[in-house]
Amino acid sequence: MAYDCFVAICYPLNYTVIMNPQLCGLLLLLSWVIMFWVSLIHILLMKHLTYSVGTEIPHFFCELTEMLKVTSSDSLINNTFLYVVTVLLSVFPVTGILFSYFHIISSILRMSSSVSRYKAFSTCGSHLCVVSLFYGTGFAVHLSSAVTHSSQSSMMTSVMYTVLIPMLNPFIYSLRNKDVNGALGRLLSRTAFCP
Image (tube, rainbow, N blue to C red; front, side, top):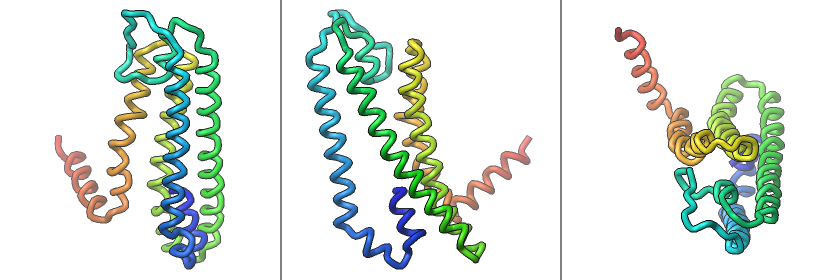
């Protein structure tokens, strides 16, 4: 998505040539293949772990870090692979997003028309908001599981990461729609004036 915004703002005349269906399909396939192999390796590594018979995971789903906490066997390889993959799957996308937005902002600042600047910022603002929420809560989930052993706080950050952010996605992206903005403004003005 950041690359799409980058191409749309920095190379608007070449957008359809650069973002052709083959490239979009290749990017989608690449992300699926990477996540398939990472998941498969995690599953194969988890297969060698042992658990006690009455093990209960104090979480609302079987998150990998919670599963590693309750194992009765040595999980050093699993933890090492988990942290290496987390760093790799976090650093490369964040670097790409920051690189794209650096070029987007520099292109926007070179625009002479304030209407063009506003349109460009509104195009990328919703994506940047969603990415910030997603990566912020994702980092909070992994950092909280590494730092604290409280299952309650880990569960709350996981709910934010897996439930709340995907629910906010359509709302954030629809704020670019003038009709939705108008309806939201009317709703907020009514609630502000109602006692």
